[in-house]
Length: 199
Image 1 (spheres, rainbow, N blue to C red):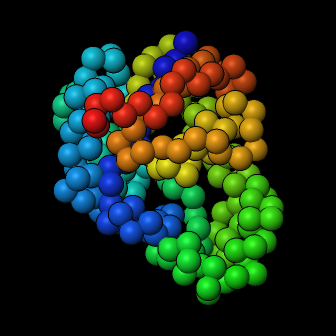
Image 2 (cartoon, rainbow, N blue to C red):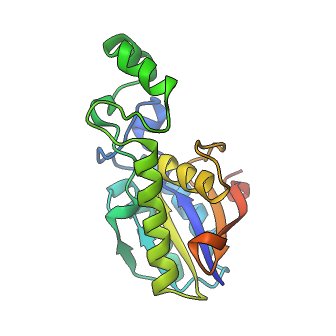
């Protein structure tokens, strides 16, 4: 059975401002780096043998802190990138509603298969996340490892594992979830958004 600890990257300025980040490359704040340190301490005893990260800097920098503490090299993988929010990236919810009111309504009327302008639909995001997990299960059978990714992608993945079309959980910056299984069809969610190390 492969065990995968899923870590949401540390905080960024756009997280503070509640802006859609998507695949725009925004760096960690000072608080974000501290969250990464705390996540690293929390994961120090889990026996991880691999460390994979989204190729966006906020995830890579979080993973680098974890890797330094655990003595693991970071493997960058673009499959773990955040959802592409197209022209919504950099905007707050209010700004999107004002600039693209019809598009906002369409996406929220059909949040599963409708994408923001130039962006990625939730179904596409889930397919990508499942592909990413499948690769890990194939390459690291029976191992324990860590993946540093993003709130949108991780929420979509957890929903898919539990058989839901839409995300159900909120994930904090630096929060840790755990999934395990031998195949994508028997994956189970063990825990969601452990933030005990951040309190």
